[in-house]
Amino acid sequence: MRHVIALDVGGTGMKAALVGTDGTLLHEARRATGRERGADAVVESILAFAAELRAHGEEHLGESAVAAGVAVPGIVDAEKGIAVYAANLGWRDVPLRALLGTRLGVPVALGHDVRTGGLAEGRIGAGRGTDRFLFVPLGTGIAGAIGIAGAIEAGAHGDAGEIGHIVVRPDGPGCSCGQRGCLETLASAAAVTRAWAAASGDPGADAADCAKAVESGDPAAVRVWQDAIDALAAGLVTALTLLDPGTLIIGGGLAEAGETLFTPLRAAVEERVTFQKLPHIVPAALGDTAGCLGAGLLAWDLLSTEVSA
Image (cartoon, rainbow, N blue to C red; front, side, top):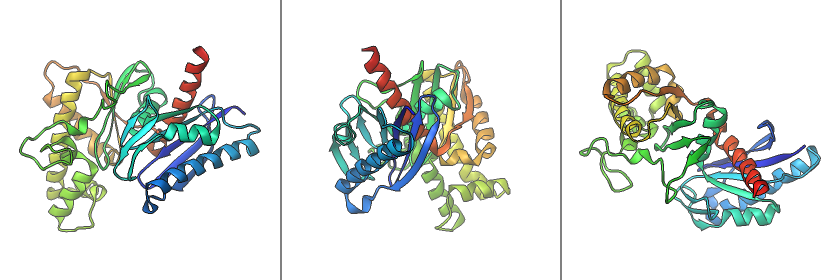
């Protein structure tokens, strides 16, 4: 059965699949990255995991994978196939495409994790059927993937979509990028966790706990939640003004709060727009499989490009 290897590398774990021509997941597996052993060990874990997947395909599907796609965090040079930098994995300038190509003996596509997840959400997830969308996962940080006509816009330098670093409150908290009041310092899951831990007096409380407290009517939780919603709406309206997407897809940990997030967020965005057209604001559909599915799409796209060339 013809298939590709799809691999989504996170800060602590890897999700992988063998993906058929119609996007079916023929086999799924997970592994730890082994980051506590250092960057070289992480790279070797990726290579060994990919080789295991190839062997599984040969044994159980009757043939070896015809290509591989891998999504990684941090700064990525997809064109050159280099994982430039990832703070949570400790690597710099890893020629991952070449290393995987040598280990597997097949063409390899490399992509940025958020853009790869956005590719999947746009083509086969919540954005299916629209040719202009913005995918925004709200996790430890906030990033974005700009979808245009079935592809993701990477930008001239591979940095398009970093809306987490739109400044929404110039007098706000410091950000790791060097600015103050960036969107992700105020509206990410990590930001809500920090604010709710402080407001509740419980250092172990997190964003999910805050959402539950909002649902039960806790006034302190409502203030924390609304502060984050206000900041998020301000950043999103800036993005809408620049990009004019037809669909805005919100994913990540905060989106798991469902309408506790989406009802006030839609209202806050609508309140701020003037001439801008409101997009459909919808939850992501693919959950934590988006990166893996997107990696599979990258692999099939690579094969299509090579055939047409």
